[in-house]
Length: 291
Image 1 (tube, rainbow, N blue to C red):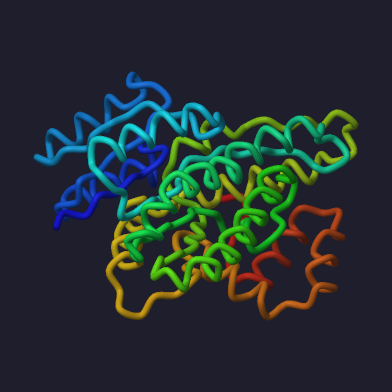
Image 2 (cartoon, one colour):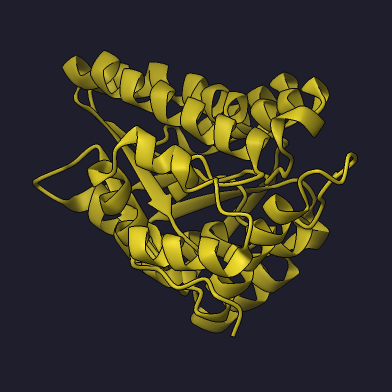
């Protein structure tokens, strides 16, 4: 029987790579986009690869849009075997300068969007006692990356929600996994350039934020690597809850696990950028110094 897979945010980056990869494996892939115009490259790549990705319009931030979008998929395909919750947005700000409205906006997409989609497919998975839900979080779901309050908080929340979901649905034979990418080639970074810096007191924080991404983008991991990991998560006989991948991800995750909370807090003390970069490299084995 053909595996029916849904990938949200399929128009670019990890979502596009995953949709194409699963289609190449013979999955019946349904990819959500907010508008069809944004998926021209996906359609071109699918044509070139000789595969099909069935696109449907859905905004994960909207209840009715998710009901309509995934309801249509269920009507056409009859079921959903795999859900990859990939759609998401960034969000930069230190807490002092981050309005609650921005937290709400980012949470609504990154957390509630995944919840809405999971709720739409879980009844069928539970009835069949099978299925896989994969939530794409971030390495920032493991560390409180500097000056990214709404993004970090949303990814930590999604990690917690996913851990809870995994235990809730285990009796029904449903597999749940978290994938935490580091820096992966994606359009999200080109869009994530805002830095409120209203007070001017946090110049260094925003500077170090953007330096981290500048260093990572220079060596960013191809999203195909994440897509192949998603294939592994779906098919492995030895499933795990959490997987870390891409530039900086495994190193930062492992080092943070070994670091005391006090050492983490003290990483924020250096006033000099070079000292901060040195300490970051010493702590995590990842060089973010300006080249």
